[in-house]
Structure formats: C-alpha cells, structure tokens
Length: 294
Image (cartoon, rainbow, N blue to C red):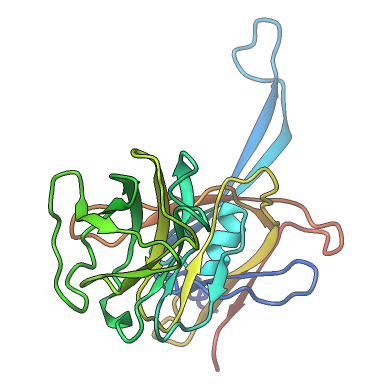
C-alpha cells in the first residue's frame, strides 16, 4: 500500500466570530493577511544530584493564542476588541449637525444671550463638510469659526482656511431675538438667543458635522463601563485546488485592543492576539475539521 498524501493547510479565507451563548455570527473578516493558532506548552523538569539531564519531565501549563492580521474595521470588531458596540446611524439625506455645546466658558451657547443653536441651512446641505468645528467669541455679538481638517473642503462649494490657526470664518454676527446667520459655503446656520446677545470674548463652543450620507457610525471608547465580551470563532483556510477544506473552531476567545494605524498611501492593518481558553460544555478549547472531496 502506498503512503497517503500528506495533509496541508494553504492560505486563509475567513475569520468568523460568533456569540458563545446563542451561536449567532457577529459577521466575518475576509480582508485577512494571516491567522495562526499557536499552542505553547511548558515542560517541567525534575533535576537533581550530579546528572546534567532531567530525571523526569512532566507537562505544565499550555497557552493557546490566536494571532490575527487583517485590514477591515467593521462595527462587530470594534465591539469585540475595543469593548464598545458602535452606534449605527440611519442614512442622512441632508446630513447632520450635532448640538453646539460650550467648551470654555458659558456664554457662547445660551438660549437667551448667546448662540441658541446651529443647524443646516435650508437647501444647502450639499455644502456641509465633515469636520469638528470650534466657535470662539470675538466680541459681544460676533464669533470666529475654526475647522479641524480640510479633508472635505472640496465638497459642494470649495472652501479654504483663512489662517494657520485653521480659521474658516471670522467676525460672524450672532443676531438676537432668534435671528439667523448663514455661514456661506459651509451649509451651516447660526440661530441667536431669544434676547439681546452679549457673549464673553474668548469663550468657545464646539459641534460636529456629517455631510449627506448613506450610513455612518460613531462610538466613544474607554468608558469605565466598557466590556470585552468573550466569543467563539471559526477560521477557514483557503480552499485548495483539489477541493480540500480545513476549518478550526475556537470555542472561547478573548481579545482586548484593536490597533488603528495610519500611514502614507497604505491600508491600515491590525495585528491582534486573542487568548483561547477551555469550554467546559464542549470539553475542549478548539476543534479541527478537514474534508477531502470524492
């Protein structure tokens, strides 16, 4: 009888995490560079006397780790590896502007004597530009406006910075008795307080803008209540040319941390290590399956 063909594992196809309680899938990672399950075992030697070699060797602890390298940042990955599920927002055909809030001082945003609100200029949502904005009081009735980035300045009407301090508009009048002031080329409209406007020079406020979109997400990471859930995962090797399939099912995994890299003209790539541990219900840490087609 001839020897059997050696079993090989080629490439990587997907990493699919699932809920350990319900078995439901969170999603799947297809933009994978690599995935490897590493088992590191400890051997405990019995040494003594004049012998240069152990008298006996016994098994110690075994550490099981799953290393992943991938280039996608879906919501479920943020939930599993950063400890917080993002808020998935519905489509916003006319964009959105967050509520303006005081940052330094208390006079910039005031329903009576400051800025009552900020919103989208009617019919001008195409000019909304993605950024975080800072409003600084320049006088009792005027403000200067700054933007965090020019990444979206070509959207709608082209715009540009007016200074190296990231100023985009200066001397914008805030009108009392609920008067409105449009910010040309930005799709934004300030509404003044219901009374006489009287702000304190130097006070600041902030708001954020999303342009018209089909979907968006936002999340705050690092709260004391954030929780890193355990999960299971199925790792599939690439299908071989002869039809062979190879699967690893890790029953319980834990990960904490998801790097987000930024580099010139490169896709961001995350390197993550998950710890695999024992599942008492299935009496194991992981399983493997292989199929050789007929």
